[in-house]
Amino acid sequence: MMLRNMRGTLLDAARKIAAAAVEAVRPERLIRDGLRWDPGRLEVQGRSFDLAEEEAVDILSFGKAAAGMAWAAAEILESRVRRGLVVTPPDPSPEPPGFTRIEAAHPHPDARSLLAGRTALELAGASGPRDLLLLLVSGGGSSLLCAPRPGLDLRAKADTALALMARGADIRELNIVRKHLSLVKGGGLAVAARGRVVNLLLSDVPGDDPEVIAAGPGTWDGSTFAEAEAVLRRRGLWDDSPPGVREMIEAGLAGRIPETLKKNDPAAERISSFIIGRNATALAAARREAEALGFRASIMAVPDAGEAREAAARYVPNLLASIRTLHPGDKPIALIAGGEHTVTIRGRGLGGRNQEFVLAVLVDIGKRARAGTADPSVFGTFSRTGRLHGRDWLAMSFGTDGVDGPTDAAGAWAGPDVLARAQALGLNMGARLDDNDSYRFFQKTGGLYKTGPTGTNVMDVRIFLAG
Image (cartoon, rainbow, N blue to C red; front, side):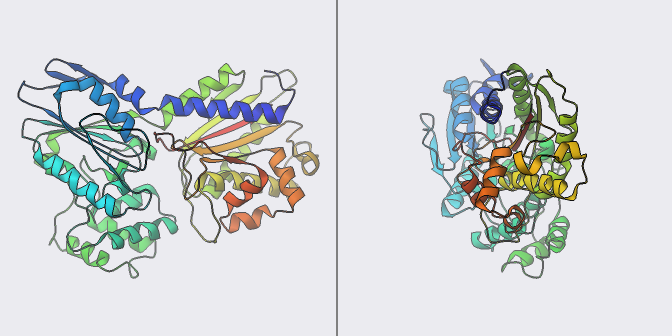
């Protein structure tokens, strides 16, 4: 690999690696790889579901990948599809012929989300006891499909979710609360259906747990009202919950309203779930592309959850250690990682978890350099050139859905040029991080990574390059 213009070459390489990661988890490709139809039999990842001539398949596709998943499934099943519903964020791609389409809001639900929730429950309830309801589920579905329990309005439910996110709640905690305030989540759609329910899931959560993806509308739920109360208390929100939220959970604790669908419920026997795409799929494709570009590539086994800024401190030592292994004539290195971080909002700035992560990487490297805690040969010329151990480097983190927080960027990238630009502009990286203002920092330094919505979602990808 030629490194005549290292910064440009590394950025170009990072963009190609990122594009390969996203391409590998295109929903159309994943559905076609995992779904087969033979006359009278639906096959999913080697498991068969028999359908008599008079029985039908209803399709409900929802989430950021809803349109692509629906098109691929409709093409495979053709005339066996009786009804179809696509629920998606604003998306220019059309729905398959004969499907109803509802565009709802993300990440914050609105009245269209309520319409989508009601319509989805009606579709599920209309299926017969011998029919099959095919749920095509991808990330973002929890805000697109909403049906608060009776007595609770959407505003109270949405405000609770926003408050939890602002307090740094992870996706599992968030969904435990959401499921216990909803008629559709936590198995609600599966309960409404009378026949078999098959979930094809594009995972956007750590661990690929069907209960967590889009808050598990089509599968059983292992969490309880007691756990929902515990999450709110742990995040300091129990006493300040919006009207109706605490009362709803207290009613569940007292047994006055039913729990979410449990694994031992007879309705759970009708459910089958299959993960058709996950973060690991994207990471493997990124590694292959990096190797094709001439890098010595590996997937990092770094625990990838929790606060973005804290996670950055776990990555930087790996990057530095890998750079130290490079000798003249060696291939450049590519370290690939994935997952999803959280951000506890303490400032008034603008940004997303990926942008905050990359800014935290820069802050961490800067602190190590100033403190002199690293080998002087690594940071000896850091303040002048930004190079590490005489090597150029680049760090990128982005959401595979093309959206990072409430911004128009997928994420951010940084390297010596970004550091030099920040120094020239007199930007205080630490202050920007403390104010959660990563977007404006990278807007000024040229490090924003923008793709637009990709039509898929398997969490985030991180790319570290050096050579």
